[in-house]
Image 1 (cartoon, rainbow, N blue to C red):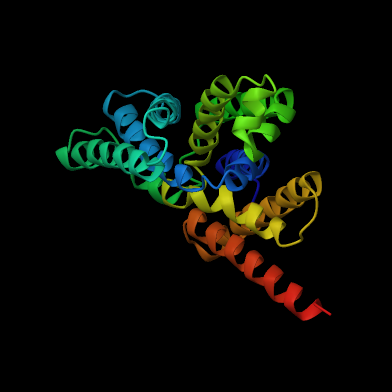
Image 2: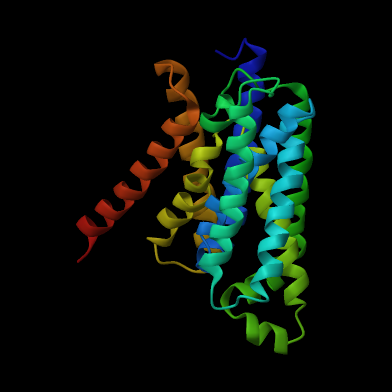
Length: 264
């Protein structure tokens, strides 16, 4: 299985995703901002189509476009504080419009389906390098800003009063989400990125432990989902994204079931 270079490349990216997605996902879920992942996933599709159109790295262009979309959401959130769902709908509509227009135009120099569903066969050394850089950037940023991100996750107003640079961190967090999504599009696929950002965290939350324990548990759930989906998709010949999403959902339902059985 691992005698093939493309399998080694896909495994490397899968491990990056397993680490990166919970790092971002736990803050997204606790902020009750899960739909931003779905919105930016659609934005990444627009970035991929632009990359294919101009013969540039789809992952890199996707990161740039998704980061721009994330910054736009944060900017508009300052003016539509009571209508966050409206902002997400606006950005999602624009992104989907760009993607569908470019895909249907017939001017793309490659097929975008691999990015929609995930593909082990299309991971190139360039994608690996971009993935490694974006993953390292995101993880280091989370580590350096861990306490500040934790503060604004639970109470933005109190954090602002305490002197935390909330606006700057929110913009920075938008970059982190963009990085997580861009890294994931090759192996997992655009359509199920949100599941890898949210489902491992949802499973960990069922344990009802403190933040650090929940975070570590979400990493374990993420590794279990990604690696199980990776191997299963290879042996059954299915797209890894769908199998990984189903595995993550199965782990969540299993956790809920075991929790109910063990309840005194």
